[in-house]
Image (cartoon, rainbow, N blue to C red; front, side, top):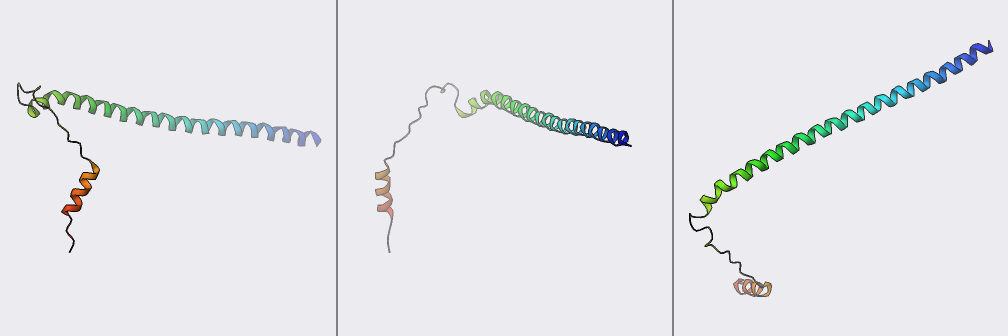
Length: 99
């Protein structure tokens, strides 16, 4: 009878190890599947954005003739006026009417 109990104990340990290994392999497959799916989504998003950027870059030369008259590409100058915050505040106070 002692041999049977010892045999059952050894078999239980072996089955537990097999079960642990199976569970670990199954969990790693889930993790790998999620990683693969994530990588696929990232690849699709990257490809879509890359195609959109390429399309927009191709449109830029087509838009230039509409925005600047022909032969006038170098004659326009952008002028930006610097506004002093104190002057702006004084003007706003002058415009403010109290009743």
